[in-house]
Amino acid sequence: MSKVNSFLIPNVSSLPSDVQKAEKSNALKQGEKSEFKGLVDQLSQQDLRQPQVGKSQVGQDVTVSSHAMKRLQERNIELDGNEYMKLKEAIGKLRTKGGHDSLVITNKAAYVVDVDKNTVVTAVDKNNMNENVFTKIDSTIFMM
Image 1 (cartoon, rainbow, N blue to C red):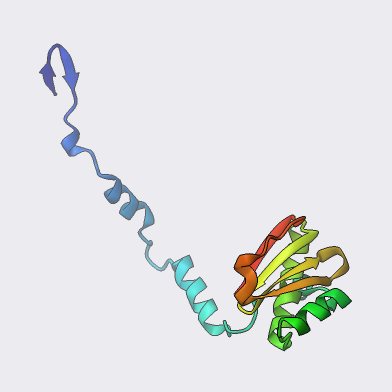
Image 2 (image 1 turned 60 degrees about the vertical axis):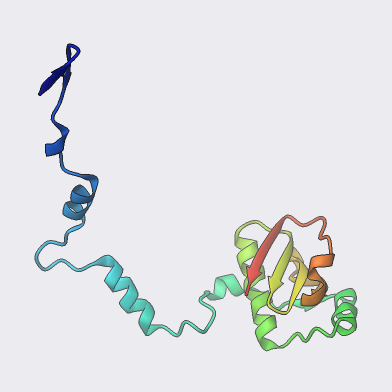
């Protein structure tokens, strides 16, 4: 220790750095497997192109209100099987988080949905999303 103006200053050069501490605490012991490697191996065996949700998250069938049907036709929005599954998955996720009147945004369009009734209330195509104001919604989910 050295003395400066009657204050004792410890020799800090011999203390281990934070990097050294982290390396030592994260080092695997003999025969121990990495949790991260196990997770990566498990995920690599799954087909990641399919939605990764369980049946409890998908929920009931989605209905489209007459107003939403009119908007889909006017705005040339095709509600194909992939888009339908995104809506169904989104409603399931919103329900688990407590959403009621929600905005679901996909690559094709934005949909206002009544989560409690599994109903699409209205739809706006991708090109006109920026020009609209969405009111009376309590949650938003992106399903890209």
